[in-house]
Length: 294
Image 1 (cartoon, helix red, strand yellow):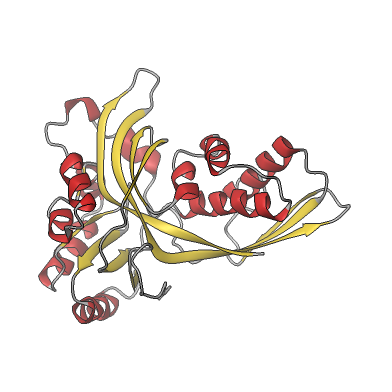
Image 2 (cartoon, rainbow, N blue to C red):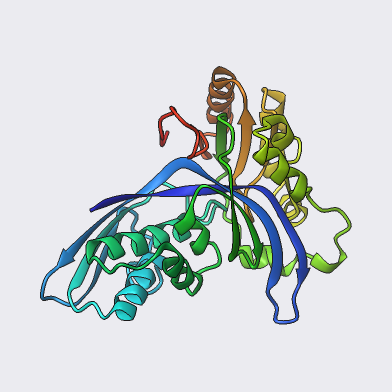
Protein backbone atom coordinates (compact mmCIF):
# COMPACT_ATOMS: atom_id res chain seq x y z
CA UNK A 1 0.00 0.00 0.00
CA UNK A 2 1.36 3.42 -1.00
CA UNK A 3 0.11 6.65 0.58
CA UNK A 4 0.90 10.34 0.25
CA UNK A 5 1.37 12.39 3.42
CA UNK A 6 0.77 15.99 2.38
CA UNK A 7 2.23 19.10 4.01
CA UNK A 8 0.20 21.91 5.54
CA UNK A 9 0.53 25.66 5.83
CA UNK A 10 -1.13 28.06 8.26
CA UNK A 11 -3.08 30.78 6.49
CA UNK A 12 -3.64 32.35 9.89
CA UNK A 13 -2.13 31.45 13.25
CA UNK A 14 -3.26 33.15 16.43
CA UNK A 15 -2.30 32.26 20.00
CA UNK A 16 -5.19 33.33 22.20
CA UNK A 17 -3.58 32.70 25.57
CA UNK A 18 -1.26 30.49 27.56
CA UNK A 19 -3.32 28.16 29.70
CA UNK A 20 -2.71 27.30 33.33
CA UNK A 21 -1.59 23.80 32.32
CA UNK A 22 1.20 25.28 30.16
CA UNK A 23 -0.44 24.60 26.80
CA UNK A 24 -1.22 27.41 24.40
CA UNK A 25 -4.76 27.98 23.15
CA UNK A 26 -4.74 28.70 19.43
CA UNK A 27 -7.00 29.65 16.54
CA UNK A 28 -5.58 28.66 13.18
CA UNK A 29 -6.65 28.21 9.58
CA UNK A 30 -4.93 25.10 8.27
CA UNK A 31 -4.50 24.30 4.58
CA UNK A 32 -3.06 21.20 2.95
CA UNK A 33 -0.78 21.73 -0.05
CA UNK A 34 0.34 19.49 -2.90
CA UNK A 35 3.79 18.50 -1.63
CA UNK A 36 4.06 15.18 0.13
CA UNK A 37 6.08 12.42 1.73
CA UNK A 38 5.57 8.89 0.41
CA UNK A 39 4.80 5.93 2.64
CA UNK A 40 4.76 2.29 1.60
CA UNK A 41 3.09 0.03 4.16
CA UNK A 42 2.99 -3.77 3.98
CA UNK A 43 1.68 -6.41 6.37
CA UNK A 44 4.09 -9.06 7.63
CA UNK A 45 2.02 -12.14 8.38
CA UNK A 46 2.92 -14.13 11.47
CA UNK A 47 5.81 -11.89 12.48
CA UNK A 48 4.81 -9.27 15.09
CA UNK A 49 6.59 -5.93 15.28
CA UNK A 50 7.20 -2.76 13.32
CA UNK A 51 10.01 -2.33 10.81
CA UNK A 52 10.53 1.27 9.68
CA UNK A 53 13.07 2.52 7.14
CA UNK A 54 13.61 6.01 5.71
CA UNK A 55 15.59 7.66 2.93
CA UNK A 56 17.29 10.10 5.33
CA UNK A 57 19.93 8.74 7.72
CA UNK A 58 19.29 11.30 10.47
CA UNK A 59 15.61 10.39 10.89
CA UNK A 60 14.94 7.89 13.71
CA UNK A 61 13.31 4.58 12.90
CA UNK A 62 12.06 3.73 16.40
CA UNK A 63 9.73 5.38 18.93
CA UNK A 64 11.47 8.68 18.14
CA UNK A 65 9.56 8.73 14.84
CA UNK A 66 5.85 9.64 14.82
CA UNK A 67 5.23 7.02 12.13
CA UNK A 68 6.48 4.26 14.42
CA UNK A 69 4.47 5.63 17.35
CA UNK A 70 1.30 5.86 15.25
CA UNK A 71 1.66 2.29 14.00
CA UNK A 72 2.38 1.01 17.51
CA UNK A 73 -0.56 2.90 19.02
CA UNK A 74 -3.14 1.71 16.49
CA UNK A 75 -1.92 -1.87 16.33
CA UNK A 76 -1.98 -2.20 20.11
CA UNK A 77 -5.38 -0.55 20.34
CA UNK A 78 -6.81 -2.93 17.72
CA UNK A 79 -4.98 -6.03 18.96
CA UNK A 80 -3.15 -6.62 15.66
CA UNK A 81 -0.84 -9.63 16.06
CA UNK A 82 0.82 -9.54 12.63
CA UNK A 83 3.69 -7.19 11.91
CA UNK A 84 4.08 -4.27 9.56
CA UNK A 85 6.88 -3.00 7.35
CA UNK A 86 6.91 0.74 6.58
CA UNK A 87 9.15 2.61 4.15
CA UNK A 88 9.10 6.40 4.53
CA UNK A 89 10.44 8.60 1.75
CA UNK A 90 10.78 12.13 3.11
CA UNK A 91 10.39 15.13 0.87
CA UNK A 92 8.71 17.62 3.21
CA UNK A 93 11.49 19.47 5.05
CA UNK A 94 11.96 18.40 8.67
CA UNK A 95 11.24 20.89 11.50
CA UNK A 96 9.95 23.39 8.99
CA UNK A 97 6.49 24.37 10.22
CA UNK A 98 4.83 22.19 7.55
CA UNK A 99 3.58 19.32 9.78
CA UNK A 100 5.49 16.69 7.83
CA UNK A 101 5.91 14.36 10.79
CA UNK A 102 2.28 14.77 11.85
CA UNK A 103 1.08 14.07 8.32
CA UNK A 104 3.27 10.97 8.12
CA UNK A 105 1.72 9.74 11.38
CA UNK A 106 -1.80 10.46 10.15
CA UNK A 107 -1.29 8.51 6.93
CA UNK A 108 0.18 5.64 8.94
CA UNK A 109 -3.03 5.48 10.99
CA UNK A 110 -5.13 5.59 7.81
CA UNK A 111 -2.98 3.01 6.04
CA UNK A 112 -2.87 0.46 8.84
CA UNK A 113 -6.61 0.85 9.37
CA UNK A 114 -7.15 -0.03 5.70
CA UNK A 115 -4.44 -2.69 5.48
CA UNK A 116 -5.79 -4.76 8.38
CA UNK A 117 -9.46 -3.87 7.73
CA UNK A 118 -9.85 -2.56 11.26
CA UNK A 119 -12.98 -0.53 10.50
CA UNK A 120 -12.01 2.51 12.56
CA UNK A 121 -13.94 5.66 11.68
CA UNK A 122 -12.13 8.84 10.73
CA UNK A 123 -13.23 10.36 14.04
CA UNK A 124 -11.71 7.45 16.00
CA UNK A 125 -8.45 7.76 14.08
CA UNK A 126 -8.42 11.49 14.82
CA UNK A 127 -8.93 10.78 18.54
CA UNK A 128 -6.00 8.36 18.51
CA UNK A 129 -3.93 10.89 16.57
CA UNK A 130 -4.41 13.46 19.33
CA UNK A 131 -2.33 11.18 21.59
CA UNK A 132 0.58 11.50 19.15
CA UNK A 133 0.53 15.23 18.42
CA UNK A 134 -1.79 18.25 18.21
CA UNK A 135 -1.59 18.47 14.39
CA UNK A 136 -2.25 14.78 13.74
CA UNK A 137 -6.08 14.94 13.95
CA UNK A 138 -6.10 17.68 11.31
CA UNK A 139 -3.73 15.68 9.12
CA UNK A 140 -6.16 12.76 9.31
CA UNK A 141 -9.03 15.06 8.31
CA UNK A 142 -7.03 17.07 5.71
CA UNK A 143 -8.37 19.81 3.47
CA UNK A 144 -9.02 23.28 4.88
CA UNK A 145 -10.03 23.75 8.51
CA UNK A 146 -10.34 26.08 11.46
CA UNK A 147 -8.35 24.62 14.38
CA UNK A 148 -9.00 25.73 17.96
CA UNK A 149 -8.15 24.62 21.49
CA UNK A 150 -4.60 23.28 21.32
CA UNK A 151 -5.30 22.49 17.67
CA UNK A 152 -7.53 19.48 18.16
CA UNK A 153 -10.95 21.19 17.85
CA UNK A 154 -11.50 21.19 14.09
CA UNK A 155 -14.15 22.78 11.90
CA UNK A 156 -13.96 21.81 8.20
CA UNK A 157 -14.06 24.70 5.73
CA UNK A 158 -14.65 24.85 1.98
CA UNK A 159 -11.61 24.38 -0.21
CA UNK A 160 -9.28 27.30 -0.76
CA UNK A 161 -9.52 28.92 -4.24
CA UNK A 162 -6.99 27.73 -6.81
CA UNK A 163 -3.72 29.64 -6.75
CA UNK A 164 0.05 29.08 -6.83
CA UNK A 165 1.84 28.69 -3.50
CA UNK A 166 5.59 29.23 -3.38
CA UNK A 167 7.40 27.56 -0.48
CA UNK A 168 10.88 28.56 0.69
CA UNK A 169 12.61 26.99 3.69
CA UNK A 170 15.93 28.65 4.53
CA UNK A 171 18.79 26.44 5.69
CA UNK A 172 18.11 26.96 9.39
CA UNK A 173 16.31 24.97 12.07
CA UNK A 174 13.75 26.40 14.47
CA UNK A 175 12.64 24.80 17.72
CA UNK A 176 8.88 25.00 18.19
CA UNK A 177 9.44 24.72 21.92
CA UNK A 178 11.77 27.73 21.86
CA UNK A 179 9.26 29.80 19.93
CA UNK A 180 6.39 29.13 22.30
CA UNK A 181 8.56 29.59 25.38
CA UNK A 182 9.52 33.06 24.13
CA UNK A 183 6.02 34.07 23.04
CA UNK A 184 4.31 36.36 25.53
CA UNK A 185 0.88 35.10 24.56
CA UNK A 186 -1.11 36.81 27.29
CA UNK A 187 0.29 40.23 26.43
CA UNK A 188 -0.24 40.16 22.66
CA UNK A 189 -2.19 43.21 21.52
CA UNK A 190 -2.63 42.38 17.84
CA UNK A 191 -4.24 39.22 16.55
CA UNK A 192 -4.94 37.77 13.10
CA UNK A 193 -8.46 38.24 11.73
CA UNK A 194 -9.30 34.55 11.86
CA UNK A 195 -13.06 35.16 11.61
CA UNK A 196 -12.59 37.35 8.55
CA UNK A 197 -10.30 34.74 7.00
CA UNK A 198 -12.94 32.08 7.64
CA UNK A 199 -15.60 34.14 5.85
CA UNK A 200 -13.25 34.84 2.94
CA UNK A 201 -12.65 31.11 2.51
CA UNK A 202 -16.38 30.39 2.64
CA UNK A 203 -16.92 33.06 -0.02
CA UNK A 204 -14.08 31.80 -2.24
CA UNK A 205 -12.47 35.25 -1.93
CA UNK A 206 -8.74 34.86 -2.61
CA UNK A 207 -8.09 38.58 -2.04
CA UNK A 208 -9.84 38.33 1.30
CA UNK A 209 -7.61 35.41 2.21
CA UNK A 210 -4.30 36.92 1.13
CA UNK A 211 -5.14 40.24 2.74
CA UNK A 212 -5.51 38.50 6.11
CA UNK A 213 -2.45 36.21 6.12
CA UNK A 214 -0.97 36.58 9.60
CA UNK A 215 1.05 34.57 12.13
CA UNK A 216 1.71 35.80 15.67
CA UNK A 217 4.68 33.43 16.02
CA UNK A 218 6.59 35.69 13.66
CA UNK A 219 7.01 38.06 16.62
CA UNK A 220 9.48 35.51 18.00
CA UNK A 221 10.92 33.66 15.02
CA UNK A 222 11.56 36.63 12.71
CA UNK A 223 13.37 38.45 15.48
CA UNK A 224 15.70 35.48 15.92
CA UNK A 225 16.06 34.73 12.19
CA UNK A 226 15.82 37.88 10.02
CA UNK A 227 16.22 35.78 6.84
CA UNK A 228 12.53 34.94 7.19
CA UNK A 229 11.55 38.59 6.70
CA UNK A 230 13.99 38.85 3.80
CA UNK A 231 12.27 35.97 2.01
CA UNK A 232 8.82 37.42 2.69
CA UNK A 233 9.77 40.78 1.22
CA UNK A 234 11.41 39.16 -1.81
CA UNK A 235 8.26 37.20 -2.59
CA UNK A 236 6.05 40.27 -2.27
CA UNK A 237 8.40 42.37 -4.38
CA UNK A 238 8.21 39.73 -7.12
CA UNK A 239 4.44 39.55 -7.29
CA UNK A 240 3.13 37.55 -4.35
CA UNK A 241 -0.24 38.79 -3.13
CA UNK A 242 1.17 38.28 0.36
CA UNK A 243 3.72 36.09 2.16
CA UNK A 244 4.05 34.83 5.75
CA UNK A 245 5.80 32.22 7.83
CA UNK A 246 4.09 28.85 8.31
CA UNK A 247 3.72 27.43 11.81
CA UNK A 248 6.68 28.16 14.05
CA UNK A 249 8.89 28.47 10.97
CA UNK A 250 11.24 28.85 9.38
CA UNK A 251 9.37 28.08 6.13
CA UNK A 252 7.86 31.05 4.30
CA UNK A 253 5.08 30.77 1.74
CA UNK A 254 3.78 33.28 -0.75
CA UNK A 255 0.45 33.15 -2.59
CA UNK A 256 0.42 34.08 -6.28
CA UNK A 257 -2.50 34.49 -8.66
CA UNK A 258 -0.27 34.02 -11.70
CA UNK A 259 1.73 30.79 -12.08
CA UNK A 260 4.35 32.33 -14.36
CA UNK A 261 5.01 35.08 -11.81
CA UNK A 262 5.39 32.44 -9.10
CA UNK A 263 7.81 30.46 -11.28
CA UNK A 264 9.95 33.57 -11.84
CA UNK A 265 10.08 34.21 -8.09
CA UNK A 266 10.97 30.56 -7.44
CA UNK A 267 13.84 30.73 -9.92
CA UNK A 268 15.14 33.99 -8.43
CA UNK A 269 15.07 32.62 -4.88
CA UNK A 270 16.87 29.45 -5.96
CA UNK A 271 19.59 31.54 -7.53
CA UNK A 272 19.96 33.93 -4.59
CA UNK A 273 19.57 31.31 -1.84
CA UNK A 274 20.89 28.00 -3.21
CA UNK A 275 21.01 26.43 0.26
CA UNK A 276 17.28 27.01 0.78
CA UNK A 277 14.62 24.54 -0.36
CA UNK A 278 12.30 26.36 -2.73
CA UNK A 279 9.46 24.83 -4.71
CA UNK A 280 6.09 25.63 -6.21
CA UNK A 281 2.83 23.92 -5.31
CA UNK A 282 -0.93 24.50 -4.97
CA UNK A 283 -3.72 24.05 -2.43
CA UNK A 284 -4.33 20.32 -2.13
CA UNK A 285 -8.07 20.75 -2.66
CA UNK A 286 -7.79 22.96 -5.78
CA UNK A 287 -9.28 21.12 -8.73
CA UNK A 288 -7.58 20.26 -12.00
CA UNK A 289 -4.02 21.05 -10.88
CA UNK A 290 -1.26 18.46 -10.38
CA UNK A 291 0.24 17.69 -6.98
CA UNK A 292 3.81 18.55 -7.97
CA UNK A 293 6.61 18.01 -5.46
CA UNK A 294 9.18 20.31 -7.13
